[in-house]
Image 1 (cartoon, rainbow, N blue to C red):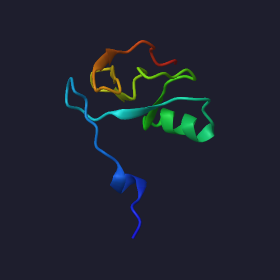
Image 2: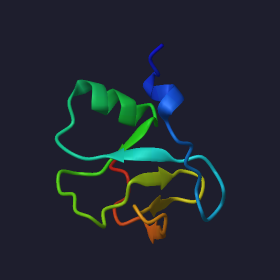
Image 3: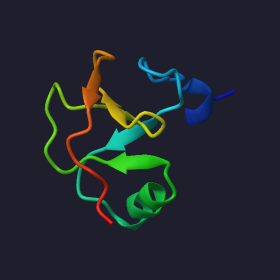
Length: 80
C-alpha cells in the first residue's frame, strides 16, 4: 500500500494563534497555482526564495511562519 501526499503530510498550526495555516508556494505560478491561491489553499510567495523565506501563512492573524517556526510579520499584502 502506498501513502498519499495527504496521509504523509504533517499538520502545521500557527505558533501565534494556533489556527490553521497554508503553504507559501514560490516560483512562477501556472493556472493551477493561481486557482489554488484564489481558493485560499496556498499563498503565492514570489520567485525569490532563500533559507529564511517563510514557508506558511496564517489567515487568522495575518502572519507568515518561517522554516524555524518563528512568526514573521507579513511583508506583502495580497494584491487586489
